[in-house]
Image (cartoon, rainbow, N blue to C red):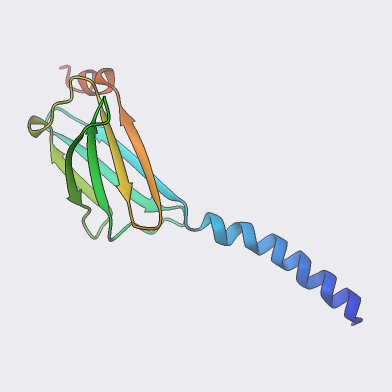
Length: 115
């Protein structure tokens, strides 16, 4: 193998692997609500659950309501009766090096509470 060919091969491998490595750390946040609780799920793009993170719950005006630690399985349940959700909620998950959020509108919340 020539030196030029090895260099080109190494550069090609780097270009293919680099985006995959960066994407492996993307944080995915999902929140759902029923009439009793907001359930938060957080995982990395490789499917591994977030094990250490702060979950901030903010109202629709971005005022902090509470901050809670996520559980080891990457989930958290927050009782709905402990939250003022009249203007919706913003759920932020922060691992210290990655963060993302999910928005629950007032319609999302009331739609899921109708019988």
